[in-house]
Length: 253
Image 1: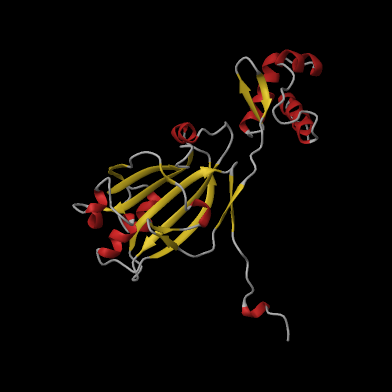
Image 2: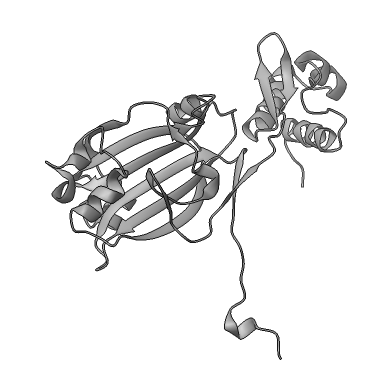
């Protein structure tokens, strides 16, 4: 297959990075040098670099040039398919237990996204309570994840759920105190590209997708009470979980 000239150059540079010819933190050749070496226009060389930047392999830094990105050592969030509890309330994996809100939560009313509306059994675009938080290390104040909760107006309006400070135990304790428990949870894990606002708030390099965990909280009868959309850098985190044997896979005795 004949690739466009910029893509052929990008393929060569990508291979050189993966082979260690350009180690992490070092600069690629200048645009003019790339163009001269490959006999292409400078604009074509820029398009090759733009492709590598979109993939998250390099960063274009003013006055430094094109720098090979330093890959983060990923931290694993071990989802044990259990919910835990400490003095602050429920949490869903031990790695995130020490994290705290770095700012006062943003609380307001807005239209429910289509997928959220379906989970909460409300009409798409119907107003729901939206609680936004940015979570991180309380010692360094470095942002780690964004968490947005959506709750139906029929449940939240006029209650403490709509206040900035929901008190000890947060919204889950409140929901159970309001008679909606014992709560039941279900999660899905996916990824998507960040919005400009998410990129800025998490300090994401260009080309890095979000790791997305969407948790639906329901009452015992299956009524949707809350959807929590948690986003973090897929360059920094991965999801892991133990795999156990089903009785059908037990070794013969």
